[in-house]
Every structure is written in structure tokens, then in C-alpha cells.
Length: 355
Image (cartoon, rainbow, N blue to C red; front, side, top):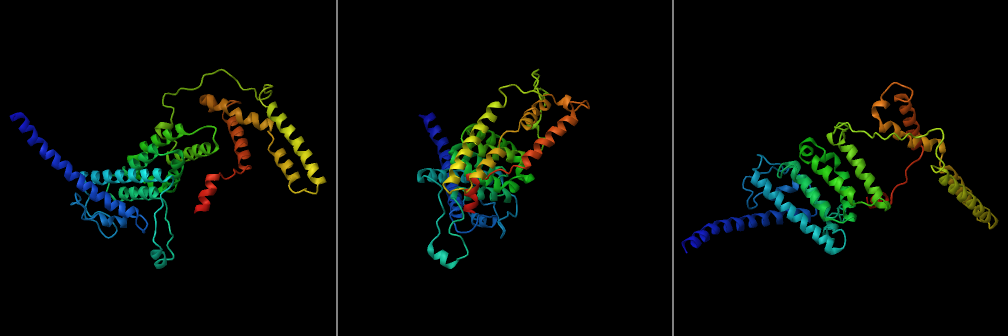
């Protein structure tokens, strides 16, 4: 009996502490929720409403929402915990609603401020804006925004991930600030690699998003980044050589034959269109198809770049098949790429229309 009584007395303070923490977390979360669902843009100035919250006694903010003194670790942890809970709740609302949860603005407010748009964006985007503002101002840890973003990517569908990734692209300059970046660069790398593993290599929208992820990584990480270096010096020692002068019979003819067949068919359609008085873009279609036919010389030049990347030491050599040959081949490939403008993806067009 004495043991049970002692155990009961020991658990009482723990329960009281847990209850106090929950009250503090709920108060902070409700204030963060009001910011996210509010009418004003989410900036550090909106953080002033956190002042006086339960558990944030050491948080004193100026008019711009910047702490006058650095808050303690317990305060920052409490804010981050409330932020993650809020983000999780908004994600659940979005899932149950079947799409992006838009912040609603009353008609009366629109009449009072006609210059303000009716919707600044989804609540999920505003949650990430809030996380970024908390991290930049020092109210939360610098890595809190990366924790929140990782939480969203791990628990979201690919459709939502594509939309949230657009937010990451827009906030790239702020995320790459030294204070934040040194706490989140490994998280970003992990999130991007995990996202690429989830993407299909056959679905067009997934291929486009995979390319956007690769472009973001190349923009954020320098060439000297350790994860991009071949520290062990391991190269492909395959002795296979790529015959530049005489490609194998199954290397390109199929592409050329298919292209020629389609050009012939298009010409037949074009003649019929002319006969029917529908000349229109018939000849233009044929010319476009002819210009897209595979150039055998360029095909061999492009794929034989693998020879140089397979053996970097030989590529850097001064011999006839070394650096000068690699430079000429690379310049030819880049020049060909510059003459072919990439079409805008449907996702990019949708974002441009929404903007």
C-alpha cells in the first residue's frame, strides 16, 4: 500500500505538468491558427499576437514581431510543437475537403478593402509561410520551417506535394539564408530524394516534377557539396566503347524509319487537306515533323558523352581523345539544346494562370 501511495503521489505532479503543457500548447496553437486564417499576409509582424500566450513568458516582441531577447529553448520548442500540430490539422482538413482549403474572406471585408484579393492562398501554404516567419524571426528554431515542410511532404499525396513544392521554389531565396540553411540543408536533401523515389518515370507530370526537384537541388547546393562528390573515386570501368563513326544497326534506324513513315503519312494528309480546301497548317505540321527527325551525327555525339564521363581522368588528359574532344562535343550538344525551346508544362501554365 505504501508503494502504491508513493507511486500515486509521484504521478500526480507529472500529470499536472502534462496538463499545463497541453494548455500552453493549445493557447499557442489557437493564436497561430488565427494568424493562418486571418486576412493579413503572414509576416513577422503578425507574430505580435503571440505575446502574452501561456508558456511564452520570456517572449517579448517589438512592433515588427522580432524578439527583443532570444527566447529560451523551451519556448522555441513549445512554438514548434504547436506549429506542427496546426500543420497536421490543416492537412487533415484539406484531405477531408478533397483539395486545397482556401482561406475565406467575408464580403464585408472585401467591400472595405477592395484592393485585397479574396484569397491569398491555401491554408497549407500559409502554414508554411508562418513556419518561415517563425524561423526567420527567432521565435522558433531556424530549422522549424524545414521540419514543417518535411511533415507535409511525408504525409501528402503527390498532387499536394507538387503544389507545396511550388511554395518551396518561391521561398528558395529565404530558405537558403545562412542562418536557416545550415540547419535545414540535410532535411531538404532527404525530402527531395524521398520525393523523387515516389515519382513515376512514365507519367508526364511526375517526370516534370522530378526535373523541377533536380533543378532546385542544383540551385541550392554548390558543386563542392559532399553529397555530389565522388569521394571514393569509383568510376565505371566497363570496357565498352561507343563507336562514333559507325553506330550499330539497332542504334537509330528504327527512329529514322518511324519518322520517315510518319512524314509520308502526314504529306498524304496534307494533300487531302489541300484538295478539300483546308490547307491551314498542313504543310507546317510536315515541316515541324521533319525538323524533329533524329540527326544521326548529333545522336552519336550526345550519347558518346558517356565515354568522357565514364573515365574523368582520361577526359582531363591532353591527348586527342581528352579535354579538347570533350569540350567540342559538349559545346555541340549545348548549342543544339539552345535552339530547341522547351514547351511549358501544364503545371507551369496552371500556376501562371493562377498568378
